Every structure is written in C-alpha cells, then in structure tokens.
Image 1 (cartoon, rainbow, N blue to C red):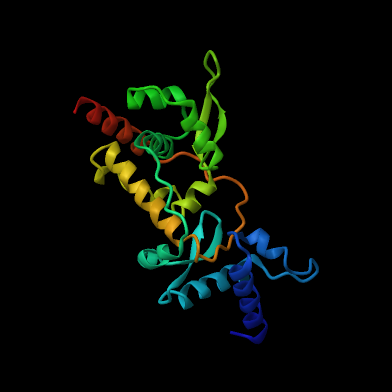
Image 2 (cartoon, rainbow, N blue to C red):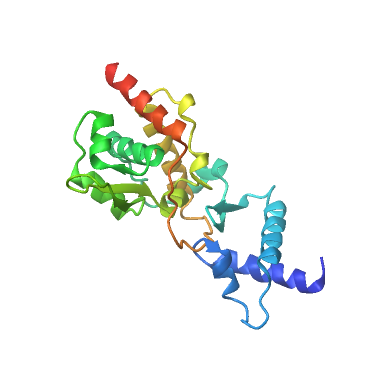
Length: 230
C-alpha cells in the first residue's frame, strides 16, 4: 500500500472508532476537502482491508445496509453484559410476533398483521415499535380507509446486527411464530449486552426497507396459519 493510502486507512479507521454511529461512504467523504477527496473505490478498498485486519480480533468491522461500524463480537456478550447496570429490556411475545411479521412480510398493514396473528394488534405495540425506530410508515394501501403500510428501518438492522434483510433467519428453519420471536429476542439480548462496549461507526441515513422475497411472504402466511391451527 502506498504512503498516501496508508494515511487514508488511518483516517478512516480513526473515524470509525470515534464516530459513535454507523458511517456511510457519503459520510466518510465529508471528512475530506472537496477539491481532493478520495474516490469511493479507494474508500471501499480501505474498508475491505480493515475487515481483513480485524477478522481475528475481538472487535469486528460490520457492514449494516450501506454503512459500517466497529463492534464487539457476539461471542463475548456473556462477559460484556456484566458491565451493564440495567437488565436488558424484554419484549412481549405479541410485540415480537408483530415485528417478525413486519420484517418478513413488509410492507404490511395493521389489518394484515391481525389476519396473520388472529388477534387484534394493540396500538401501544405499534407505538413502541415506531418509538424504537424499528419500523416506520412507508406508504398507504389504496383501499377504503387508506391504511398505513409499515416496513422495517435501518435502526432495525442495527439493533439486530443484520447487514440486510436477507440475513433474517430462514423461515424454513423456524417452526412457528414462537420460534421467530425467540430468535429476535436472542438477537436483541446480544445487541443490548454488547451495547456498553461496542464502538458504533456508521451514518444511519435512510431506512432499510424494500420487501423480502415473495416466497418468504407466502411462507410466513403458511407458518402463521399452521401455528393457529395447532
């Protein structure tokens, strides 16, 4: 690596360590003079190099959607959690089922969620998910009443340590909504356990939405109906 590129690597590594939030390429570029910025290809090359350098360390460079951050590895959660002053927040089965349906079926209306679960969805559940910035309204369905359509956000990916929606657990490997909820709760525990020592590094600009594959949509409906019959 040439001397200028070594310096570029040092600058980007330092920024990732102190940013306190995930960084996108656009955010990284704002650090450099407008007359002589590095190219996006050069920045990507540095990020790939940092990923390799940290591959065997307790801290890893993690890509979340179109941004990057440093974080501690999940395997060290049992130790890191002892630094936390408060117990991790536990969410109800109903809330996590609702979040799972939105994640796999998005964009989805409240009525869609109720049809899948077979029970009404509390307004407080939607408010909690919106307040946590895990979901947001992405539009309305063009039917009478124009119900809101919900989808997940980049905050959802960050909290559950997912690069994108494709990293969600495969529905074929999950038996029912209880298993989906447990999986999400586990990811939430690991995320909260590592919160106090993780070095975040990425710009949470924009939301991670755009639905998952069509076959996943049909699978969640089938899984939910099977769970209801049982």
